[in-house]
Every structure is written in C-alpha cells, then in structure tokens.
Image (cartoon, rainbow, N blue to C red):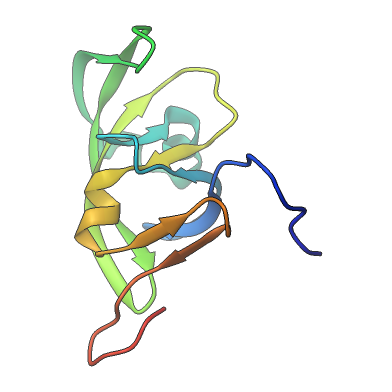
Length: 128
C-alpha cells in the first residue's frame, strides 16, 4: 500500500523497546522528551522498574500532564541499540508513546513525515 500525497500524517512507527515490539510510537522532532504510556509499561511487566516521581509535563499548548515517573529502557533501531529515559504518563492518547529529540539525536537520525521514513547511520558505515 502506498502513501497518498500530499498528506499531513504524523510519523508513527513500530519499534522494539526493551523486549517488546511497540506499535503506534510517534517519532517527533518537536518533542523534548521520550514518553511512554503506563499501560505499555504494565504490559511489558516493567512497572516495578519505574522511578516513581510526580512531575508536571507541559505540552506545547500549555496543557499540563502529571507524569507517573521515569524509566530507562533500551530502544532497538537495529543494528543501533540506545538506552533512553522515558517519562511515563497515564493519559488518553492516540499513541503508545513518543520518541522525541533525545532518541532522534542519540542515533543521529533524520526524520521525514512527508516521506514517512527515518534514516540513521549504522556502525562501520551505511544507513538504515
């Protein structure tokens, strides 16, 4: 199935986080944080790994979300594996999470919502 052009779709991916393949992750250069839904963490069986803390996350439109805590997890964009810190929220969202600038910058990725693609360099040369 191809991509109808022009479109205004967000760049939404499926990616392995820890030992689980997670669908509906928004790859968002506009986000200063990586975020995961509490339900995703619970399904992974990693709720006890959350560093509990109550903090506020302020959206670009000024809306405030209270985070449940933080969790460090590996993100597998093979062959690159990067450890990432996620804010854990318990809010209604169309996405299971957001991979923002911390992840995008760490793997040196270039994202294109227009082309629905992510490109990043891999060790020993090449691009994935």
